[in-house]
Length: 114
Image: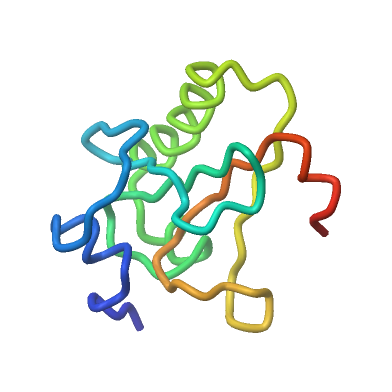
């Protein structure tokens, strides 16, 4: 069950500030407040879904395609030639904010990550 008090829901409602990188009608991307690498961007759908599985099950085809095209656009915009995409599903996987999101991570420290 989706909890609309999570930080990403608050960001979407402009209740918490972020440093936006990209935004369109379906997606918001912003800098992570606790980066693990020189480039660490969070990409979230504007649809209120807890994880990847809910996103795929509940989003429309255009929302899904737009989400993944936005990631590609952000990578191109930042001129990243090497990067990692991470999405966790569930507490045991390491998901700590239960609003579906993808981390774009790039830079010298990504080799230290699992």
